[in-house]
Image 1 (cartoon, rainbow, N blue to C red):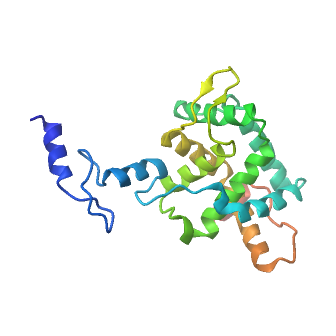
Image 2 (image 1 turned 120 degrees about the horizontal axis):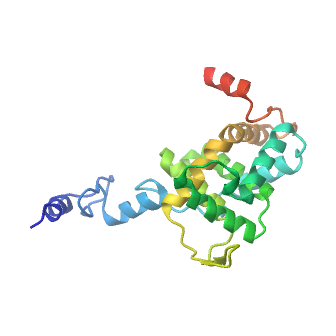
Image 3 (image 1 turned 90 degrees about the horizontal axis):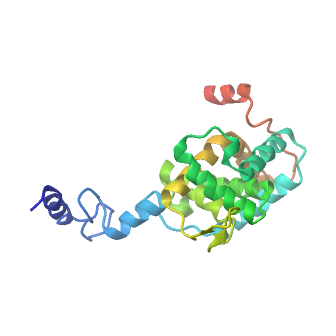
Length: 231
């Protein structure tokens, strides 16, 4: 018997590490059963689950109002400019090679299906607000889970199914968890400061629905980043 088979045999005699699950582990090095290992790969957590776009309809409506009524605000204007750049494609960015596939998939879906940068930004704000304001509903318990959720939210702006790319190649509806995570990680890295301020504004409006003016400043300025770092 080979070493790998022996390790698999020993590991599969143990039970899944998820609380309450008594299924055997799958494979040589996994700590979870097949079901929870699949959830870990798809959603970033063994107890993760698919979150449908309908789960954060309220946040999307609030994000739409925030962006559409404040397009001239410096913070939103700058975020919209960056979101339009994302839509136009990854070639405009000096990205690590590992990000190219993710950027290509996202750009193809957005451009070919005429999704605007504004729609992309609204979806980012809505998904981020859902993560931050309703933590007890979604089970996003890790950075990886947050990244995969954000990536899925952006990729799912376009309905699932096969679609043509700009080069007339037919892409499958299936997008790997790795690509979803890279898209989400890039979004949280590039827009994270803006999304934090936008979510704080949505939370304020949700609790006090009186003053609709927004009061955060430009989202990517260095002084603001330094101030946050010292908080």
